[in-house]
Image 1 (tube, rainbow, N blue to C red):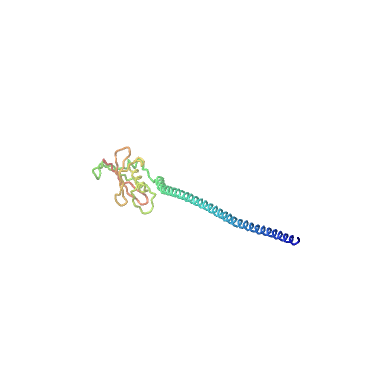
Image 2: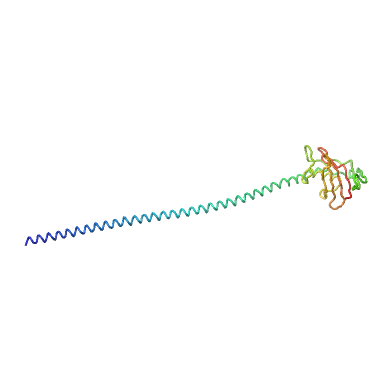
Length: 235
């Protein structure tokens, strides 16, 4: 009986030992599976997370690039508008500066009028009037020994200038006004031109009259234009 019991106990112990070993083996296999799953799926999660981070950075970079391009475009457009505005202002200033000297010259010309107004005795009592003249269109010729040079603002060697905005033109019309008695503001100049070295001749009339006058003037150095003869013409 004792031999049978020993064998049964031995078999029972072996079964228990095998069961424990099988459980331990199963537990180890389970742990291996769990650890492998964690490693595998965890690595995918990290890769996915890294990819998401990279995608987010790319999106932010694209947005930043677009913003920079938009800002650069706005700056370029604003710069173009500013440059165009500056060019317009420069052109306007240039036009203004070009006009100012001419206006200043005219003002200075008006200020420097050296006209010597002849007294009545010079125009009437000292005048020598002759019927007719050197040409058929002359009704009468007037000469006055009392006529004087009108004065001048010009210096240096004189050269006659037949341009309406010139100082010389202004002084020639002053001399003609002095000889005829027609005010410059009321005078129509039909002709004014060269009549020889430092000599000029002009045809004028009053604006409210048809009568024309041909006036001869000579340049006197340092003293200006001097009337020498006036012809009353019938044209």
